[in-house]
Amino acid sequence: MRQQRELSASLRKLEGLGFIRKFGDEPEAWEIRRILKARLPAAELEKLKAQLIAAAEKRMEEEGPSDGGG
Image (cartoon, rainbow, N blue to C red; front, side, top):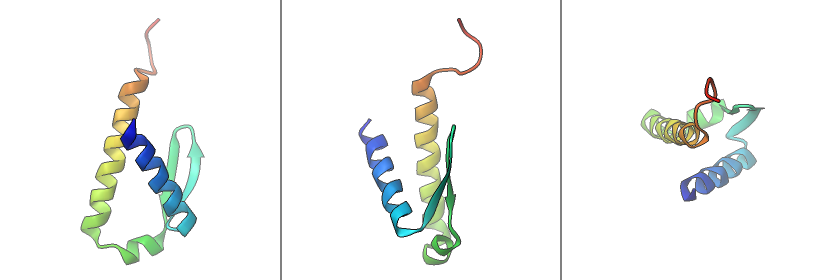
């Protein structure tokens, strides 16, 4: 839960700075703006991507399967 709050806060901060843009709610989706690609090394972007993927996977696990069941 703590990681999710930290991730949400970081995303809002990055959005406020113009580095990312939210473009979907279901599922929540974000666009990485080109200026971010120019300012951060590829390794840092890959690290950020891995963190976002891990957070999304954890969220999916917590929500449970969306197909089938009951």
